[in-house]
Image (cartoon, rainbow, N blue to C red):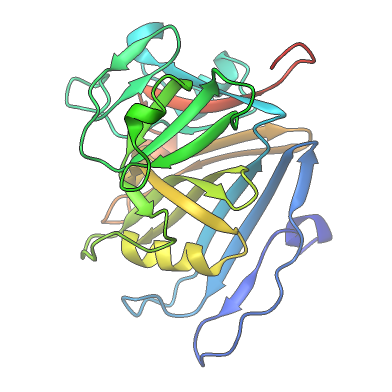
Length: 277
């Protein structure tokens, strides 16, 4: 393995109960953007011998602006990679789950100029971005069990609501279940950076959350975005370009062999210009 490839890869031997080794450094792609791939080796909760892979992109919201793109505004679904290429996004991931009509989000999804779904549901995580106030973070994750949405709905112009994974108390709040799939998620770390997280490994979500909390992510809050073959991640920064798709509970996705699953809603980032707030 080359030094560049090894950078950001963390091998953890879970068997034996020994303390994990110190992680290697994150790879700085450009100012305000860092990438790491973590590999946890050993048996997972279902006694599989396969490793768990987690890709993480750490984003400084003061240097990168979040963009929400939807088929309801732009006309057609596409793979996350295609959304990114067509709209000059540096990176992108699913913007939550969607309904049977193939366009409308399951929960609140809106930008300053377009509303895909105006309904605030019972789900407890809301990614808030495009701040209306200079004294607030440019982007953050609200936990509606400890943050009142009414207090924040005018502070931000963009919202993506979905299922909570890690609460404001740092707890794993996902009920254990038998199904296993790949996962796309969004996190907030203790310094206020936003984490795009993708694990192509088929794993029970509750077990994945436990793994994420063990990794050197400084994870403060985390929300679920999508699972299975629809869960996709794309990054193009400098010499680094990655396009990653997920798998179903069965472990097979024919669409992933041909470039991924078209999805209607994507959350991405662009570099801020000097005139950006």
